[in-house]
Length: 180
Image (cartoon, rainbow, N blue to C red; front, top):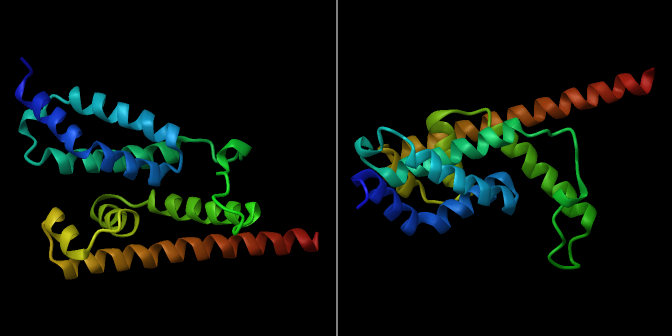
């Protein structure tokens, strides 16, 4: 017979496997990596010594999955762009170059989110990646909907700042290169 914590973990994965996998796939933008991270998530949680003491195991698994996805994003080599990383077009309505540019923008936003920690990242991911309501997020985080809205707004403003600063640095560098 299984230990209490491990039995609870199996139940959580049975209920939340699809949701966790979808979340990981949205955060890493690669199905194969999402699959690997799901396996790592289960192993990591199963080996966690304090599993019996975790009150809300589903929420803990969710936070751990988000952290693992952003840790993977930080660790991977961003300098190499491989053709197999570019998704196939769904239809002829969007050109491959437009799809690639859109994918690059998503990569930049996810890279900026990776710099966040704690409640800001959790609220942002639940709101804009998982598309949950402020009320739902507030219930999950133990905050009011207004507090969650403020966290999301601050995170969004910070992402805009990071991306505009990056664009500014890039255009200045391009300007210097053009003068040389």
